[in-house]
Amino acid sequence: NAGVTQTPKFQVLKTGQSMTLQCAQDMNHEYMSWYRQDPGMGLRLIHYSVGAGITDQGEVPNGYNVSRSTTEDFPLRLLSAAPSQTSVYFCASSPTGDASGPQHFGDGTRLSIL
Amino acid sequence: SQQGEEDPQALSIQEGENATMNCSYKTSINNLQWYRQNSGRGLVHLILIRSNEREKHSGRLRVTLDTSKKSSSLLITASRAADTASYFCATEASNYQLIWGAGTKLIIKP
Image (cartoon, rainbow over all chains, first blue to last red; front, top):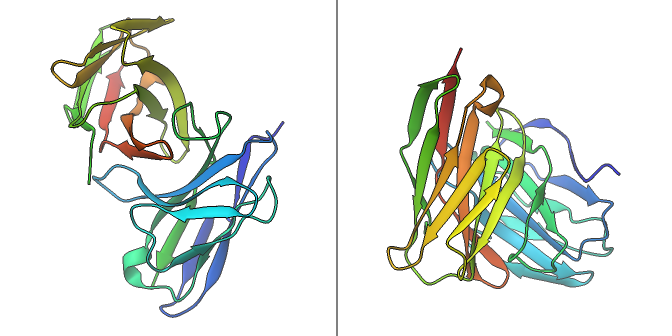
């Protein structure tokens, strides 16, 4: 049981490039979410999903897209990378199907945009 | 917007001492969660306390909740070097969205 797995762990992009951050969980959790973590700030929700085929925006969705074709996978796409998107990105899942219960986190992707 | 705000921002204590950190929030909640984050790792869930609970224990951790003051505290007793980490509180903005504080960075000195 690997939990929540994020790849890659580190990535450097140039402004304007696109990329996909991968997130997979093997716990059959319906609820999954993406956060960004910036120094001195709490986690901010980017997008979330309550099940396959269902996604919705969080607090800071601009510049990011998500899809949820399977229960296990919830990739995050940066459409055209900007320096302001330099951050650490965390994926999380929850067994309760919503945000009310304990969240299981991956170890993050550290992304730098030059 | 930040619902939960931790206090202090940083705390440095000697091993064996108790560590207390606080979280304040702005709107009514169903529950409040505490998490730990070790350097370079993801967050790990510690305790969830519901709005109708006043105190909850888990090993060396004790969480209190005062809904009248919209505040919660996390007490770590008999601290160890392994407790060095950042600690975050989270509350629900809606059924599907959590709002997080900026965290308290705890350093345990040997």
